[in-house]
Length: 305
Image 1: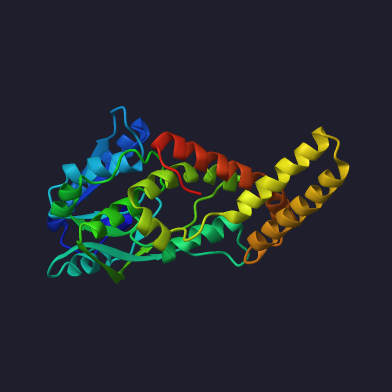
Image 2: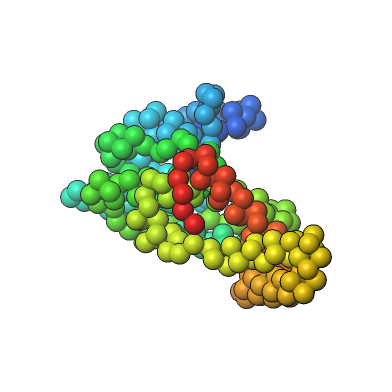
């Protein structure tokens, strides 16, 4: 909040809206206290509670832009810090027929970082994520804003970006609009919880199959299918007492799990506790990811490998 109040921009020319999906009394009080202080400096800060039956980041962002007064809507997240020139640089990029602008995201990392931290740093390479993007209100109105079927922070920003592209609307980069995105602390095994995002990948694929294959996942996760396949063969061999089959399947499964684990460790910490976590989660991620993938296909009525 302090970063948004310190932007190199006339306070009378922008307002800050906090969309609280949790409808937290503590957050409301913090924002209202800040708003009173900010008002003395000429700022407008408003708190928006998400109280309906639909929740999630898409619903919160829709509530925010629909309540906003400006023609250009800037989005960021609660764990981000805007540089002083962020808003000015983002707004300046709206020339001619541009309707969307994506800024630069900087993710600082420690010397020895975990796989979770490394994957979080890939945000700096992502296209049009709501940690740092700007849209014209008219464009949001034209396409209906964010799809509120995306209930977690996954795919809702890419879905909106793809929709704009399919409407032949112009989106550009503004690398001078910089957001600092520190990595949130997390618990061990967070990579298992991340697999739930595969559920919403199905909806993204259903809406934008061509762009999904071009920009998200060109080929199916064949390695996960192979790991699950040999695991099923292993179980079959044990149940049917086909010990040769079971032995071959076990060797193949161990090889593929070891390979997956090594791939995940290539750019990350070699601390014993992190290596142990990678070994355990590498055995669980393939079936868990495919489970959420198949559940998403059933839920959204789409088939893709």
